[in-house]
Length: 118
Image (cartoon, rainbow, N blue to C red):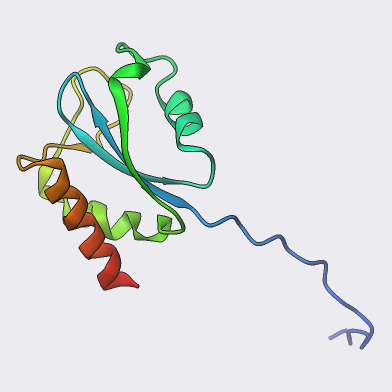
């Protein structure tokens, strides 16, 4: 076993940027999507759906929560029974879900899950 010099200092690792949690709505179908990204949400939408059958302008950003990206997994599990595949996106994007109630109720539901996790 080699001894490490007491003067040795490891290179600093950059801390990853905290992820944003976002809520999207497809205006054409009424479906919602929750995701997390460390970049701008509009850039994320254009990367995900640049080659889609529907226009990106039908996807509307409902709300963005800063530094709450770690909640994505728990929120998606909460909405697992509501998941449906999007009729326009045939490339594996099945994380869309149908929410029957109004948007404000959905936002309150997501925010209550976030507050339970923090």
